[in-house]
Amino acid sequence: MDHALEAPSPPTPDLPVLAVDPSAAVEALRPLTRVTGLLALLRPRQWIKGGLVLMAPVVASPATAVTQVGPLLGTLLSFLAASSAVYVFNDLKDRDRDRLHPVKRNRPLASGRVNTATAIVLLVTLLAVTAALTAMLPTLVGVIVAGYLAINLWYCLALKHQPLVDVSVVSVGFVLRVLAGTVAVGIAVQPALLIAVYCACLALSLGKRRHELAAMAAAGGEASAHRPALRAYSVHFLDQVVVVNLVAALVGYVAFIWVQTPPYGPVTAGLTFPFAAFAVHRYLQMVTVGSSGGDPVEDLIRDRALLIDLGLWAAVLAQAMLASVWHVW
Image 1 (cartoon, rainbow, N blue to C red):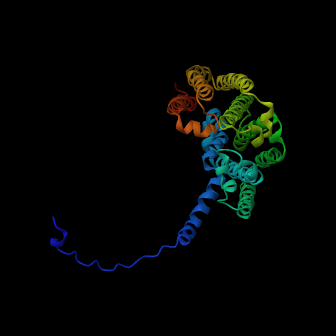
Image 2 (tube, rainbow, N blue to C red):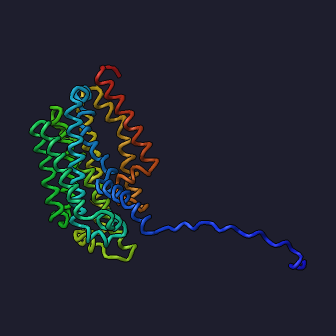
């Protein structure tokens, strides 16, 4: 068709042009970025580890745990604040080294989302909150929390670079959580439980080292550049010691449950052992066959089979605790 015959288009009215200043948009997002960065520094996903404070009272003496809920909750909160303070201090010290790691370079301080001054203020605040909470608790609990902070400070400054010492110190920190919960409610210390927790956490820490070795090798980097202690580890060695510690943790768990009020203790040990064994087997499968192990908490959250197993395990334990309280099975 001849374009000369087409009707002319009506004139388009002039529309106002909205000027967008990219720098203003970025500035508007900075407060939100700072808040999320500060929250990430606290590592709230790791707070699940604080549940170890509740383990001994809830399993060994549930009636006492109910009557002493105040001191138990205060102990839990003090460890949450103390552990977050340790994370902040560690990230402050290692921010340059973290930039060499394929995952840790995204941490708030390493990535620049949070500046050093702000992190220091957060650290001081967390230490003040920890001190205030422990002041309201039994003296021995305060001593345990102070010991936790002291060994973790030493860990961040020096011990994290010593092979085997590094993972041992981390595991002791978890044992102190269990011990503090025990002392807070005034029940007897359970040595078998402490051994089980120590060995299980040692296995998880060693599994994390294994993951770091494998991940850095796959990325073409030098693992020891990020964590010097990795020079003394190998995947084959770590596979062996992880198994040894998981077996020891299983034995410790059975011994702890077995000595609880008869006949509930022995029966509960027998009924829950398959769930404990499955958790061990599943973790080994995830670490050695898959590519997991870098963050045990993330592995727990994401693995459906492990979550189902832990849920069933907890249900059987809960039934046993109710039976021991009400003396019915």
